[in-house]
Image (cartoon, rainbow, N blue to C red; front, top):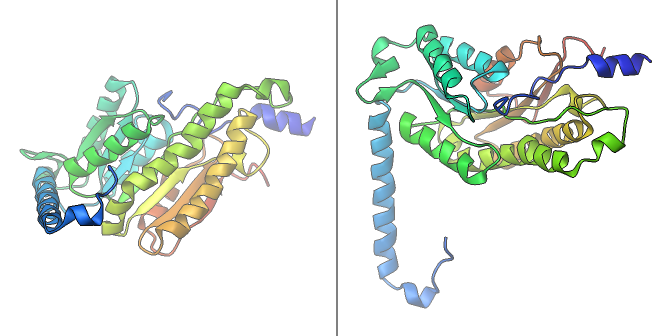
Length: 289
């Protein structure tokens, strides 16, 4: 009976986060000397693009954070905290444009940056970019646009998640294939695609990649079996990515329990710490004690 009560009162921190929400190389003999010319041209183009990005960002050296699902909940709370701590911030959203704009306005008011960095002729220190975290192509575009607009990337808070509430006492109610497909796509794969897209940029800044997992991934609980299992997979994904991204990038996760738990401060700790990677921190207000 106690377990049933625990399940019925459990609240997941990310269940509405999703916004509610080379071609192959030519053969060696065909490349010849022309290949070197092409490679030199490509390198020059890349350098020009990087220079343009720096100009577009107003040549600011302030760190940049990208927060997915950043217009509400944990994402928005973290964006506000980082703005107060001197970060430039890009929030991602899926549908609610007005809500995203409102958060951007709040960040501009909360910012501790000099006025000329917050808004100037080159661009803004706080932006919202619409992208569907269920699409690998959209995720790649989101990261590219962030770097073009801001000139760098120091922190990626991969905060997206998805669930549909099911009866956690019923196997039958938790065998809906569409639920499992969507949970794996958003709760696991989206974080992998984001890390892949951001890795080269985080390498340059020796940055941090942080995800929002869930206490449901540690203890049998949560809004659905698919959610609980995919959150457990996400936590293990983070440990593997920490190995792959070492030594220049730290990869960690937070696992909130109750929605009232303060998560943003732990995200900031992960963003600033140079000595933690492959770590998952449960933030359940002692609920599981």
